[in-house]
Image (cartoon, rainbow, N blue to C red; front, side):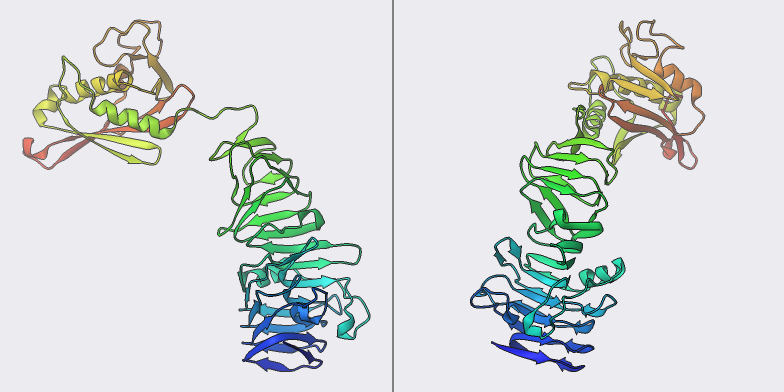
Length: 432
């Protein structure tokens, strides 16, 4: 393992190097180079610590592989840059950083660092480095256009002039976010599956973006407090995790939430005990409900799409004219209540709410507007459907006691072979 000095604008292309580079000349280019460094044997902060040590304001590193020897001592970084002026031009793209995982006395290895406020004697430059002026787009270009494998942290742009201050940081593995060190308007990115095992705070002014490929999981009995902005997948490892939203987290309102095993639930509220799937299951069971005094006339099929179900039935022309469709529908509506384990407690139709009659007198449907009134025309759901039918789809809303709802649509078809004409479909309840 050797140290290689680069003090001028030069292109280094191809090959494998065991050791480290020290770059003090501007406009140097590294292209398709594999750099394997092992860190300093004594664990000290020398040129051996990093694959490339760069004290410059212009640099291109592309299509390279940075690999940290598994025998490395102390922390070791892939590419460490110390800007010599605020306005910089760094092209860092198409590279792979592998295995920068070591920690030492609270510090952790990072694939790419761009740091102000640091002076490295081995560069021959005595002045401290200058915090780089970089845009969000320039930071993202580094994060998105390089590959990070098993690194403690991927990218960090920071200033050490008065202690560590982070302007931008990206993590795909581990949990080394350093959120407490965030500068005003700092940007953080999580691009892999990250788990926090301790209480965490996102400061006001800080934006934490969790990409589609990433997630943030809070450990058991931990609290995530968000005073800034968080977007993306945030979840708990177990029930009892707490999320305090004082700023913005996706579409959650300000407040305190607990993880129930599948979602964040606002403090002081309870989750519905009935799901849409439970209501759909009731609707499907109702199709198979058996009356001792009645046999369904039509042939029934059902289909489901998300939180909705469609019941379709087919009749001969004669069956339809003898009100078979209407009678079947009345019995089906009754079965929604009568079937074992039914969770349907309310049916809404045309902006009117219907509940089961206190004194049911009909063998089929006893859904009425006024539960204490008589089960008769003008009060029943069936009569309302019949009165409003106009060959357009009939849509009902089925609700559980806790307000979970599902849309139910009836369609009726007449078998064309029984009409002597083309197939006829009647969209609606079959009430006519």
